[in-house]
Image (cartoon, one colour):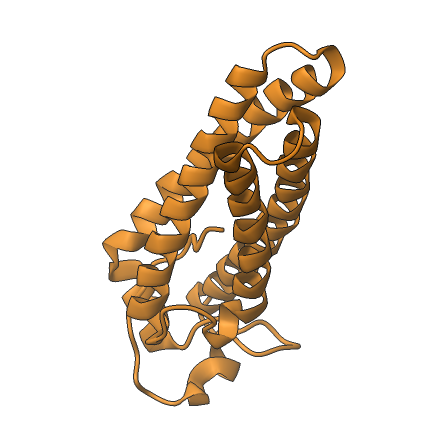
Length: 179
């Protein structure tokens, strides 16, 4: 999960949301939230961690599929899944700090509620993989299939965030165009 926009915490009511969004929906950010987002160092952190996590995911996916198809390279696959899981944890912790700065809530802020809910599924699957690995539970194949389920959920979750990022950029471009 990634919150690729900058935080800025606003206590003002969401009265300005309609003015900050293209036609047809509530705005992702109020002007004050947008200002906090743009001022936050956590926005940059999220912007770095998101593609890093995606790169780790791609490499790990190749290693996991190789192991499932050939039976070779289980250690490399496991190490890559561990790296992906810790990248996920890092992006979730820093993303919650970002959300607190921008929206005043550690998680489940209105604009990212469903993304955060689905992120919990992604975290649960990655954590289940770690529990299987560390606890010696199940076969290598079973463990890797849990990791693949976590990866599938991650792809859906990343898509959610990319759609939000696109919506925010469209809203920002509408704001930037003089009336």
